[in-house]
Image 1 (cartoon, rainbow, N blue to C red):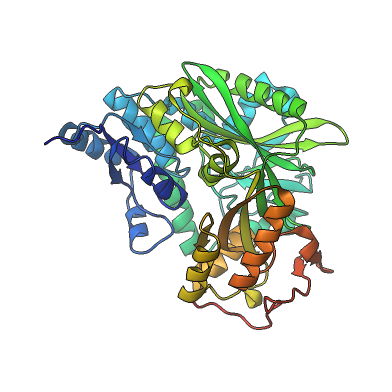
Image 2: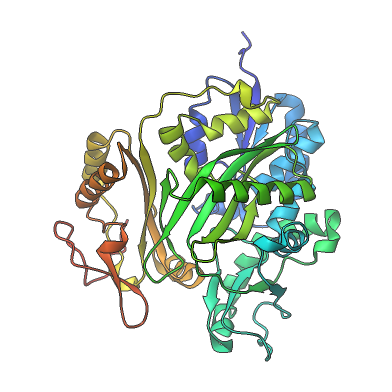
Length: 457
């Protein structure tokens, strides 16, 4: 007997996406495609990957499976692949050209300069290819980042020409990875948005020192809607995320201004359907709001926070949009927390990478925090070294928790950290050393700080 659930496709769906969409399984019958960039052997799918050939194969498969929706919140390949496939199949989705316009960070900056000049900063392309000598005459300090990337890879402030040269000097293996991560996007963008120029380069921006935020929203039938704003909390002295907090502490009037900027940009790039995320700074002293970038998909890591605090499931909403529905078709549940956070555990020194929690510890965590989510992310060898270079730190785990309020959330986080043997992701647990690197203060109960490297899984 045929299932009454309509068939749908998830693309490049892992970690937060895979677990969140599992809760939607009673609504649709999911198929999957894509590969995981962060696990072996799945990541060998990067070899020779081409978005057009990938889409062609899925079109042929769609004739057999009869998909009625396609969803993806994967920044590197999934969002664009889903847009291309939805266009080919005549399904609701974000226009591919709008996805490209958002993901090509230099082009997006030029659009923003035109429609919201008050919310942008001066920028320019780095006029050399990867690994070529850095020209003289550039202004420092500056913020350097790839024109096309994800997860803040290779994005950081550099103080001088020597620092920029070090950031853009790659071995053959690094160059191989970078080119294969960018080339699938480059081929599609070259055909559909040629005025954007190549994505195989870096760009330089004027640095901004201010608190950072994320505005999450969606567009349905051309109308822009706000989901909420999540606060980004950094490790002291760094641009590395330590937590994302919900609800936001940002003044609602500033949130409304941010939404207006997002609306102007999205209209300019003809983003008329789907979820989006806008990263931005707000300086409380000058009251200036500055856009960092637009992401043409749901910020998956925050979906769980909204479910806890607002009772709204953004992943379910994204599926509703992909099926042709709107916000009125998406029910809200009773919130389970007054405050929630995505805690990001990082090491800034390869000699102080903590052990991953064993099975007993993970079982104890699950028993003590049945509402919790724990994602250990161990790396070692070349992968660990590359992460330190590309990100300036090693993200070895993420934990989600909720609490009655901020104080209760912190208390629960402290208890979980003691159980896991991981350091507390709150600024007052850290200090900054003479080199400007975060150093953990003595933290009873966790065995920190470690004196030897512990790299085992």
